[in-house]
Length: 501
Image 1 (cartoon, one colour):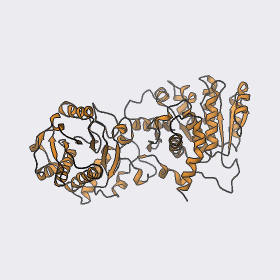
Image 2 (cartoon, rainbow, N blue to C red):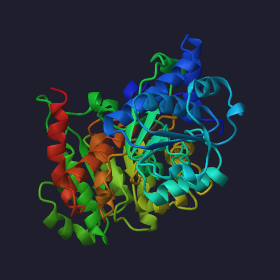
Image 3 (cartoon, rainbow, N blue to C red):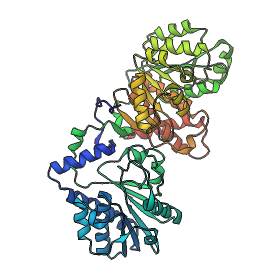
Image 4 (cartoon, rainbow, N blue to C red):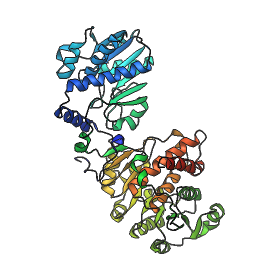
């Protein structure tokens, strides 16, 4: 593909993530606006040096410089730290005489020795600055660069990374060959997707974004189509209860239950109620009615005999959105129910079995998606639905899947990506590892269907649901099980509402 289509709406400037190509464009736009590359590099190096001085006491520091602009930043840091009394050793990958442009200007301003890059420069160092390669690295680290990065990791030396830890791809977060974990990563102007996507996120340590003088208006011309998830993206449209509402006008969510794994739909229904749906109805097969009725105090439970009964339910104007999949089973009835729900024209959330039942042959599913639809696959379900999408970065895979399917795709994981068919994509990074527990995905889909039943569009609902889910898990902390998550939502929502008052 040639790239995402233009986004339909702008993201808040502070939330924007810039791809490597977009960051090059931002640098070029700054230069065109009168900010020289020499000044940008001076400001970048100064920002990193200031961050180091603010966090560490003066100590022997090894600055590892690459042959490009990251190395130029390293020369600036070396000069500033040395002037501040720090013992500095600087080592360069390549020949100093072959440096070009702004990097050469700043190398010439460094009055100290320039060593050839080798693992020996680490001897006696108490802090390492990784200024080898930035976010634009496109091939695996090799040779001396790979050896010294591996040595930094093996020695466990405190490390400050410039832009990204060398070896981390700025767009995907993938590790190209090897990379060393940083205690601090200082990037410039805006974060990159690789700072939030795994495994790169695990290597960045504290992430600091420095202002180096790039004018904010350059974002208007670049029009980034990806952002970091957070309330600034969707809080303005959050469906808080109003005095003029009753239970049905607040949103009636339907949850299609199964007869085997009934816990999945019960978790989703509980989450939907906590997430604000005024009414939640579990549609149960006849043989499981008593299970749902006994456990769903406060939710309605209705018998679902066949696909015609589901169509009748969805035809009711008081039914606003439906969730299918959790515990529904891999059977023809699940497939039929999904197609009937999509034909009804109401907002639909599809999870778990409602996705897997179409695995390997998704054409009927994609052809039926014509309205508001949110797909919430984990990686296994995603691979079944989108086998032809190459294993490139998670952001691009989710974006391509949304364009192919016509639905918003919420690709789950510790670095969940939510992507819309119009090219917008968001990375959610607040999910703690405690969420790796059975049933947590059912809770997420229940939150999403509640938000859609209350009128949120599927992209905003997916972003909001992922964030609420992560916050609820963080609030619960260690020992989390899926049943805890709905009960954590009131506290999360209370704190969220306080941000608007």
